[in-house]
Image (cartoon, rainbow, N blue to C red):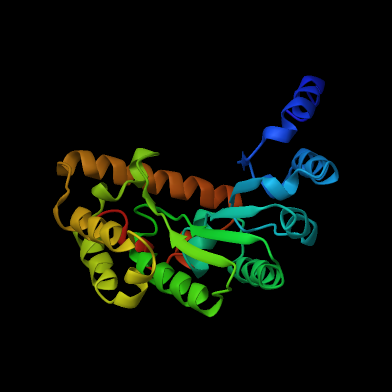
Length: 255
């Protein structure tokens, strides 16, 4: 879009009336056209009237990105993090957990010195790969939010269920994996569930799914075989092993 001269001509006409801009991906922090677009709004004096919404995987927070968005009226960042430690690194390969935590701290340093309002939303996608790690993620997100509760920011979590690719849907989980995941989920800090709006209800839905939603076993076995084949294929292409990232990976396939 940013290579289309008609876009920039239209933008000149629309700029005085823009109130909200939603930039999605690929990763929007990597697109030079986004910076050119936002800088033009800043240079023309319109940024102070505009709210921005971004989806970001938190792998590439640069100082110029934070400096740029800090000149707008309000920022909503949808933080697409799907787990902690190795689980996150496997699902969002080649992300590094230490790098994500570093970027989150960089973000909050900028928020704390800013007058811009920030709405920060964790948006994990819950699948068969990370449902047993969901409790750990919720508690990490809660601890981080409470420790970084700046006056000009607020926190939320809006998780969703993954349904595609179908073989990653948790309804095809083995019985042993369901028991294991439920045991982890049962240990959650209840304060974390209450902190984020509507998270308690979603968390209950995850538990309900693991306890009561089953497909017939031949179909479930077929999808688990597809999952195994897919994981093996990407592991071979990346030169990694799933068990080095997801410690419960042996429970994902056959009984």
